[in-house]
Every structure is written in C-alpha cells, then in structure tokens.
Length: 131
Image 1 (spheres, helix red, strand yellow):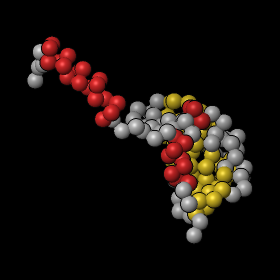
Image 2 (cartoon, rainbow, N blue to C red):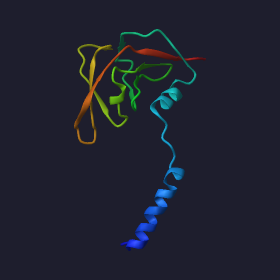
Image 3 (cartoon, one colour):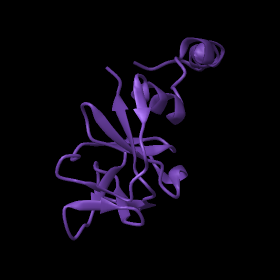
C-alpha cells in the first residue's frame, strides 16, 4: 500500500504527537536491578563465585551482571557498567570452576556473532531472599 505525501505527513505528525504519551517508558537498569533484589538482603562481597552452581546470568543495561537463581543471586556491578547491554551475550574464558574479580568477560551480539566489547568484573555481592 502506497501513501500519498499529505497522508504520509499526517501519519508522521500523529506519531510524533502521540509517541511519548503512548509509548511505555522502559525501566532503567537500576530500576530493573532493584526489582530483582526486592525481598533480598545483601551479604559480604566475595572475590570469586562457583560457576557450576551459578550458571545462569542476566545482563542488566549499563548496570550489572547477575548470576544464579533461587534463594541467592550474585550481583557484579563490573568496572565498566556503561558497556553492558542487555542484548549482548557473555563469553567467559575461565581456567577452573570459579569466576573471579578482575576476570575479563567478552561480550558479543548473539544474532551475528560480532564482538561488542569486554567487561571487567569486580567483587560479587550475594543477595539472599528473606523468608
């Protein structure tokens, strides 16, 4: 279907006017992390975590990487959180069963396999669900 110029201009103008009020605001990374941490208490930070029991990871835009599931999750705010993108996948090269502070994680776009950057890990903070 082809739109004539006046009709196309009217549709574009309506989209500009309605755009911000119609579109839902996407929560910030900090808001997403706060929601994940609801009902949990922070523990003492650790330098390393076992990757065997914490194989699930979630990347939160410009905020943190969260490992694990269930009662305790581990939050790593990374040295360069601005480089985190929720669409990126993590490539972890490790030489054992632990992921540690100062390890470097490579990020890539899973849709095309292209390298997108590196993330430098910091301490892991455990957050445990309160009963």
